[in-house]
Length: 351
Image (cartoon, rainbow, N blue to C red; front, side):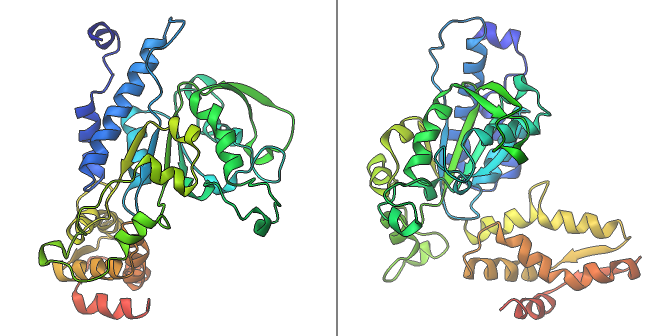
């Protein structure tokens, strides 16, 4: 491996990948470390394959499990930025078993190909993030969906993804907007594409029990729920995921709900935080924007009460800042302070 590092000086170590993720992703320490190791092994897999007939290093595809707004997509997006790899996000619910109305799974590779401008070599080293993976669990109510006994959007999609996750050569549509057309296809090898799947699995009994606790909690656990046992392979199998499918996702990472203090950090600290974005936007109109600490805590309390997660912070802030942004061109040179009273008035309109 030392020779490989001398030959490829840009190979990032797990510590370097973690450091990059840590700048943008608040909390989720264990998840960031596990993803960093998987990404490092993925780099080594790509390097070891060069000139070799067989590759002893298996794919490090990842399954992320966690509630809405806990950072699943954010981790994957920033991982792609750290590794300088093409990246695309797809929704598992858009895909169906081959031969039925909807997208074939090869289209997700086509979307990655589109992101690279049609460059096959770059596409074959990219990252595909498949969201809502829990929505393609095996179902027994196919008749209710109009599919009869065929589970075309669940088990069928899992089956179709098996070869893609493991690594195979597939014909990918050049034009993803006309994926149903049988013309203009290109051959892409998915062996070195890193697949990161994610889902909330919110209706899994184990997670339901965690998100809807019964009884009283100790004061020490008011900000974060007590530690629960981790989701096992058996839990996922009982949920409806195929054993063959899980076998192609060897790295399973559970993300925890963000605490109030972590949500406040998300709002303020990262280089791409929402707060810094608004400050910069209004500075272009020569406005000095400031938030009081109590006003920010009020935003966080509202997001926690509604179980919106970090993703919901933007919609809340859009409502809070609506009037300020509208009047910005006529407020040049002014200092604007957003306080608790101002936020309270704006949040009343959301309820």
